[in-house]
Length: 293
Ligand SMILES: [Zn+2]
Image 1 (tube, rainbow, N blue to C red):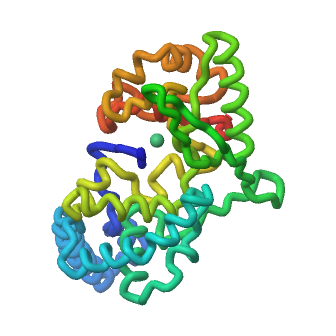
Image 2: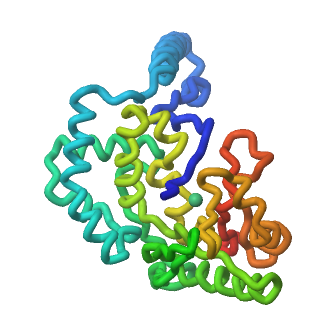
């Protein structure tokens, strides 16, 4: 399963140095104030140096206790996630479900991981539709299957917001009319809570390194799959080609060439194009930008 590969993405800074000049311009110009101002300036510069030093050593490889917490959490969450996956509703998981039954230490650890994403605390997405009191409505995409080497394979239920689903459906109708085939949604909306679970589930594979893991798996709040308004979609062909092992397999598809020429007419664009310097080329990952117009 793809969970958003992104390379070269710097860890967000949790702390920021306040500008000493902003503070100083509010001080009166008396000698006493000037002295106090200079003291404040020195204090802030020293603080900033210390913070800069701290920023050079980001939280990365988990220590022994944190590894135990992650392993225990994955064990605890497994039955819940399996049940949700079997019911096809894992992508809509919320934090209250994920946090249920966890102890204080587990919760604090998960909150620390959420903080890394810059989203603040672990928070669910609750976007009000513009001008209404209506919440985002998700459309389930069920019964999708592809045939790989003549073996049928079912795709778990995926979700797109109503708006994005309609755009996707229109685009696929046109693609089928033009080239006689369409693309399936391998991965649509993923809630921040589900993204957090996925992120942590890949940590052992990446040596419990938060930074290395983030090159391949997005933190909750960082993934375009977690934004139902500006939604990312990972496509897969009806023959099971998704480019995961070899992006060229996907770029060789007539479906990909069609997308390159026509997706803009349907408000879809490639998120991580080949020419992008700071992200891995992901020819299957397109985002709907309809809401931005
Ligand atoms: Zn993606």
